[in-house]
Image (tube, rainbow, N blue to C red; front, side, top):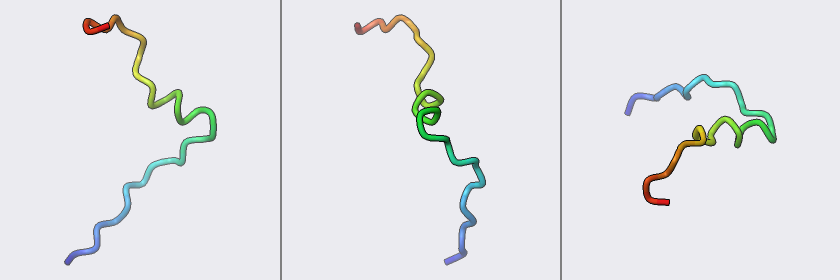
Length: 31
C-alpha cells in the first residue's frame, strides 16, 4: 500500500504535554 507520511507535529515537552492534552476545566453534568 501507499506509504503514509507521519503527521508533522512538535514533540510535547515533558511536563507540558499532559497540560496541553488536559481539557479546560468545565462543570461536568455527570459529576
